[in-house]
Every structure is written in C-alpha cells, then in structure tokens.
Image: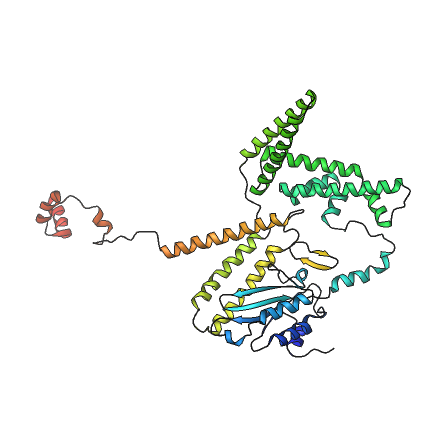
Length: 450
C-alpha cells in the first residue's frame, strides 16, 4: 500500500525531522500516525535511528492553530500500534518504538517526539551469515558477551579484575553474587537431570561442559570477601547502600532477639547471644561509616563540556523572548536541541535493552559504566550529576547578579615614583636658594677651587 502526504514524508525521512500539526483534526492526525508508523522503517542504515517530532500546540499567540486533542490523538494512535511512552528515550536504536511529550519553553511549543520502530538489518545480516554454522555449534544458555557469560566463563584471575573494574560499588557486587547463585542453581538442576537419566540438550551440555559448580563456588567466596572488605575496612558505601545494610542488620537483630526470648536450651541461647553480639558490633561499625558520593557517570567530562556549550544558547533564547529571532540567531539556536539530545545519549549510553517476548519495556534497564547496577542506583548517580550542574549554574548566576567583588578606590592626586621618596625640605631649602646657577654654576665652583 502506497502512503502519501505527511505519512509518506515521515516514512521516507532519512534524518530527524519536525512536522507541524497546525490545522489538522484528531481524525486526520490518527490516520497519519497509523500510516506512518504502522510498519517498521526498513530504509535506514544499520544502527541508525531518527527522531520524528510533531508540533501539537503553542503559546497564546499560536494556540488557536492547533486542535486541543492533537497531542492525545498522536499518543493514543501510537499506543494502539504498540509504542510506549518513555520520558528518558533518546535517538538510539534501542529506543525504537517509544515516544515522549515535551514542552519547549524557549519556542513555547508543545511537541510529541517519536522514535519509530526500525528493521534491525545488522542482526538479520548476522543471522544470515551464521545460518550455515548454527547447526554445527549449539547455542549456549548464556548469551555470549553478557555479564552472566563473562563471570561464568572467565578464570578466577580475570574475574577478580572484572570485579574491581566493572563492579566497584557494593550494590554491584551484591548483584554479581546473586547472578553467581543463579548460575549455581542452574548447574545443580542440570546435575539432577542427569541423575534421573534425562539427556541434556545441546545448549545445556555446552554450559555443563564449560562451567563447573566448584568454580562458581570459588567466585562466590571472592565476591563475599570483597564485599566484607568494602564494608569493614574501606567503608566505601553510598548513603543508599549504608541504609540498606543498616536495615538488614536491624531486621536480623529483631529476629534474633525474638528467637532468644523463645529459646529454651542453654546452648541455643548461648549461640543466639553470640550472634546478637556480632550483629550489634556490625551495626555500630555501619553507623560510624561516612557515606561516599555515588560514582560519577562514565561520560561526565563530555556531558560537562556540552553543558558549558549550551549555556550561552539558553541565555540567547531567554533574551529573545517576545521578539522575532534573526536568521543568525535561529541558526545558532538550532544547535541547542542537538546538544540536549547528545547529553541524553551520553547519560544513558551502554545501558542494556530489556525486552519481554520482543516487546520493548524500557530503554534504560541496565548499566552506564558497570555490571549488575540497579536502575535506582543509576538514577541516583544521574541525579547527582544533574543537581551538581544546576548548583554550579545557580552559583554562576548569583555571582553575575552580584557583580564584581573588588572595591574601587579613588585617587585624589597622581603619584609618581619621584613623589614617593622626597628628600627632607629643611636641609635642601637653603642650598637651593644659593645655587641659582644650576649645573653650570656647579662646574664653575669646581674650577675655582682648583
């Protein structure tokens, strides 16, 4: 089916474009959206994503041009096609099939930004090239290159280096430990399957031959040792991690106290009292730890550079409110949206895509610089970065409003070096009156004395 009009322009777009919905009815908008995004785009290069922006509303001067239901018509049609709203979505392939609503306060426009579904040509090419060898090599239960595959197949020495560089925080080590425990459970289930005489599949046999339970147990011990050192020796915990550990030890103390009251035998009471004493000691150590700030983002330096670059553009945009922009100003401000998009991409870069039955759930369900990091921990690091940038901007604005800090002084008379060191007037006054001949007089006096 051939698509024409605005829908045809959208499907033919090879780069990010903006489409104005002024004067269009909700019915026309719904038809356009369905025709434009009903099928994934198949003409883009591998790994390419474009951003389609719909202008759905404006300020007082342009409000009458847009239907009140324009934005709702766009979002409802997108949801009907399987798109999901993601306020943190950015122009990357992983965010295909999402949209977000924005309000450009500078231009006073309301928009809906769409990241269309695209045909993943890179994966299809790879599948085609590997079709001949897929029957020979069994597919592993662990995806090659995934964090689980890396920690399961690496040697203990490689694992320790990986733990130091990719799981530097306590919460990441906790996630790594949980992954190891999951692997151990999987291997135990394969053992039970073999004991019952049930043959393993090729993928199961490949994992069983590659990874051993003993090796996973050794790696568990390494992680537990590193976690204990991080708490008891270095105290390298964030505020969130400290609160989590304090809650854990408090809950255990409450349970141990309850069991101690109900305990009957002396040996059990003695054991519980010893455990309770260790818990109290651990809680005391945790309370003395001074929490550390979350790790900086991997791309913090690049993000800071972009924030510095966008600062004069935002100032120009604020100063231009209420008047028409010149051609030069319009061209300069066009860079603003690009910078904001680059910042978003850097903030969420390297985060893994999470899918359920090939349906997009979120573009941000993984990691920015490490492994096994929870979404809440990453968002905390992101907030620290953004809050620090806002604080610097407020300080800069306050300093500019206050003006220069130096105090100007007025000088009544010009001061020369000669005026600073004057000879005493009382000694030279008499000599000055008698020596009217100046230099030549002095020369004559010298000649007479001879």
